[in-house]
Length: 171
Image (cartoon, rainbow, N blue to C red; front, side):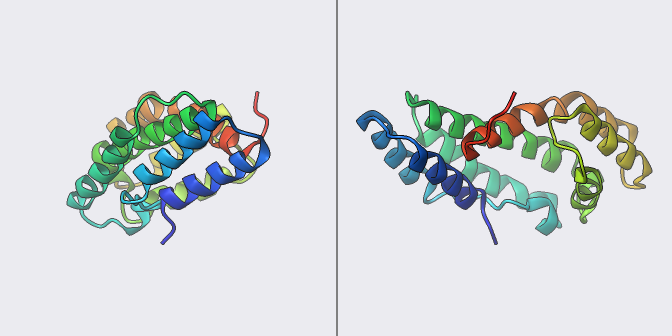
């Protein structure tokens, strides 16, 4: 299973390899790795989770990783930490507030339908997700409102940070 840790470290290594870093940044990268090492966080939890009670122990590992890393100075490390914090906010909404709607593969199914030709920064992406949720028998109006008002506003932040860590230019 691919974990966010591995993805984060791969993104981080790709960024690190592109530009010379100050000794402070190199120290922060090492601290980041030490904090991330014991706190593996699966990337596709919604695909594998079948019980709501599965999430809190995994979440606590991710929170410990974020707490372990203190006040970064290096921009790349700040971005990596902000990415993880944003991802955690999104996971909380999906796994705690929208679990009954999104479990059993619903999230992966609707996400795959909407990703074709759209980026998650595009407002049309959130609109597509909303239309797909409206068709799901497990989803209620409150789930659609959570998507619209809490989850969708995080998409541009998440995508921007992800692209930044991958070294892509973004607007």
